[in-house]
Image 1 (cartoon, rainbow, N blue to C red):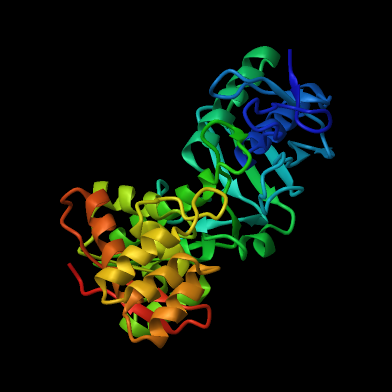
Image 2: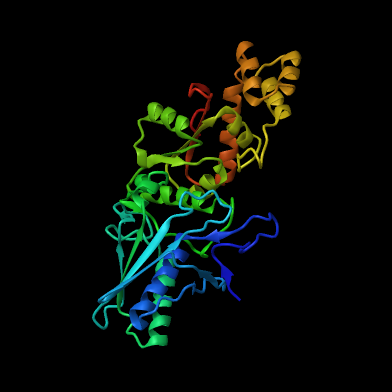
Length: 372
């Protein structure tokens, strides 16, 4: 039984009720499978079915198909399900052209697919940004089509994404040195809604690229304002800036396994108060600012009992900070220090020096720890 890639309630997630979708790698595999089938038989299978690494067998409707002498092109519209994916709705095309016997499967980047220009990624510099698992999937399906219809399996596969270069500006690709468009991604072929696995994978690739470039100081930042603060403080190059978002734990756990000499964590006071309290996912849906915890930190920083009570009852973390600032109590520094302690706990003795910078919404530094 196949799972339709578009329409219906494909791949329901029992625990959330959200609809899963398909990665760019799965879509490219489906398009390449359809194109090679048409090249050998003259007919495009529509829908076209593929088998993903964990055994799922989705079928994809073709959005475009074109056959000329010696090559065929098929296109699939990406359905990311209920995930907030910037590539949702993108038209992913694969053009398959026959090569001489023994050439194998050769990959090319068409319009809208990036090219790797920096070391540190799982692809060599100069290669099209088609990741290893999608490459393996496409090779496997090309071989299956060849066996079924009498082909050699020696083909050039050019993957392109309509408007991919523009879409890529909303991704990490330019910072990672992937220029000209999007990456063709996916390890399971399935996009799990709100898993944020792509974001976490981008964090990891960011660390890899920084290390490969010889950088010894990187910064995990919760957003663009904190990036500006860090650049002003340390004059770090763009490659050193990790778009951490809410995933402090992802940064710390990956750097624990792949150390750099120094890590600066910079973010809004409220978010970093969550890290200080032991939360590694800083999203508002998964962790909350603990005002009682802030009250305890305020007391340790010199707050009176009356001020501590006000902090505990404050509307927001920022309101608690303002109360302490007015009284000359360095709550921001206390949060930064505690967040650094939590980061060091997660790093488990990895040879990484850590400092923390807390900012307000305008980007002003409201708390800071020394490196340790």
